[in-house]
Length: 146
Image 1 (tube, helix red, strand yellow):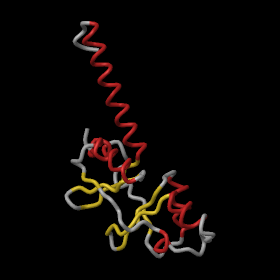
Image 2 (cartoon, helix red, strand yellow):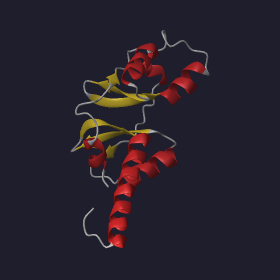
Image 3 (tube, helix red, strand yellow):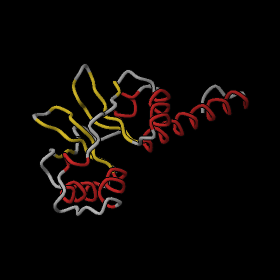
Image 4 (tube, one colour):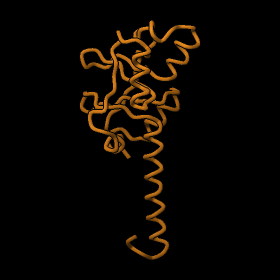
């Protein structure tokens, strides 16, 4: 299964972002409103970073910073790993596991089109496995159609 399949299950143009000049508090408000665990950091529509719940915990809370007076530029992750729509989701899962990350921005032909989470990948794999099981059950029962 490819990333484009996972992206097909997400709302179109659902790129939730902040700028590096936003405060952490503003980013957290957006994340809470959209029920997401990370926001992309964009400048002039270019991806320059990502800010996640993990960044908040490790770079704000644990360092005694305040979310209302800390700018995203100070705590964002600037080395962002991205994937393409034609990458396999198994490869994405491996990247997430190896790099200990939960979100991957997605590009299509060099253009940012969204973000996938570990939850998106797990859900897609579970759906695919259910389809395989259903197909095998139909095969075993001798019914060509289910």
